[in-house]
Image (cartoon, one colour):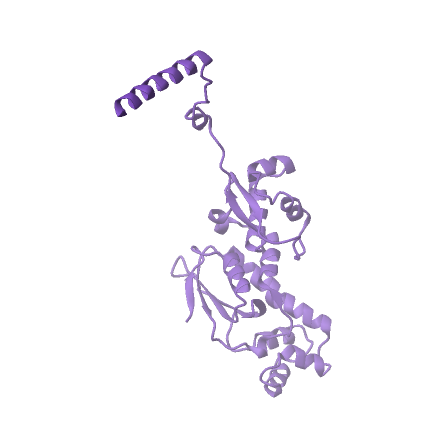
Length: 281
């Protein structure tokens, strides 16, 4: 059963986190929504294997990687396609080309960076798109370099360089909220300096606006970094409950009862108790 929706409901960062946490395998399709009839709608395809991104393309003919190789002059596009056709059905074309000495490890890394990191990172700026995840879609071995990356690692890389956050403004944590760690120990991901600074406050006791003041950073910057940590599965947003002056006044402080008043109450109680016992006899 395919999962569908819109990026206005679930951000790409949230989708990536879901797919990684669930160790999902399949194809995520993004279809941009044209605002006018003159705008061209585009499709983007991202393949996952057990929660890790293994390939990305804007076409489904499985010629994208071969075209990239041909563009760089490392190997003719048609030659790369012929090699792909002779490869075993379950071996990524990148590994086959490396085994035959036609591509180096460094060339494969550059291909993966261009194909996945650069191409996928640009999609985080999409203001809205229709998406579908098909867990039954086969892996595109002719589009795969043989390298992969955790979905949340790609998310962190994308959000660090994202310039236009307008599509994610409504997803940012509230200034009055705090963040709380959801992992044991320190993060395994490679965090940048600002992310580490914010991580030190992930104990749920200080609001983001107060953290921004302590770190001397713009509030929106702290909110964006907090969002990165949330979508990376490292922290969660938690509300802070702060007692207001009105709430404090609504509960009067206990007043000590004078000793004389206490004695009077005590004698009265005894008087009624004695009368009650006499009536019983």
